[in-house]
Image (tube, rainbow, N blue to C red; front, top):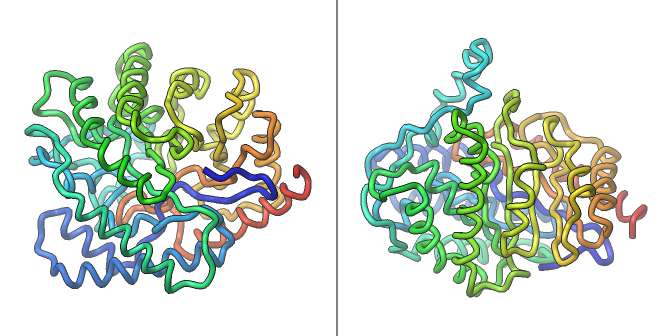
Length: 386
């Protein structure tokens, strides 16, 4: 995994906006409606090309395919794994339902023509990895897009979900406990993770469960039960990563990629010691949004391992405000001061911009303005720090 030796490198958290045509196809397929396979394949390749070129134009150093082929960052696993059927009934985030007027305001978001993350399939049988075809097609499409685009990334990363977020978003109707389900999903994901790294990518494990589930699945339960879940999930991740070089893995932790009060978010202080047990080479942390922008102080107070890199979220992915480059630079500087070494800081985004097809708070054109601001802010920070 590259570090910021000569300049502050830029990256993002994975997903980018999908074109309307692809969004409609993915949403229809997720509902079980018939979709022409050839049409979907063409739309996916076009969208991947459309996602790669703008990243390079905006100055992104560590990029990917924008997750264009996937219906969402987590529920796409049903195309790759056996055992999923039926429908989950995912609890709505506590901060949304706590404020009736805000819930009313938010209802249109749940009624969009989009992939429904609240009613995903559930585990009704043994979960096993069954088909590498979707992953191989994604990688082939990405390489094809890179080959036809001017310029190149310093490095490429590839996302895959945490076993914990799969087990929470796609509920359990088969295993004797949540812990057993998490372990089974981790065992299934092991082969995907190893294949991603063998293909030459940095693996990013998307683990919003390590923070967000405190105010979702564990909203009405004691903090200790949630922290036990975090510990168990990190242990499962570590077992699944046994054959993967630590330096090739980054772990993304966030509190949910949606605009809301976030009043019930667990503090970074509570989860950080457990997250730091993960066998990874970098943490990708949300540090730009109004609820967690102060928590660089937690890293300074707690200490940040010298072998670990930090992808600091310096761009908020839930607002159409475009951050000023000076604000971006200031956030990078705060992160560098917190961990004591600017070379181990990469500038990133809090989360993805299209975590599910049809869902996203930021307009597509604004997304790329934000990425340009990310690059400009990183250039300012480079001059001041390196």
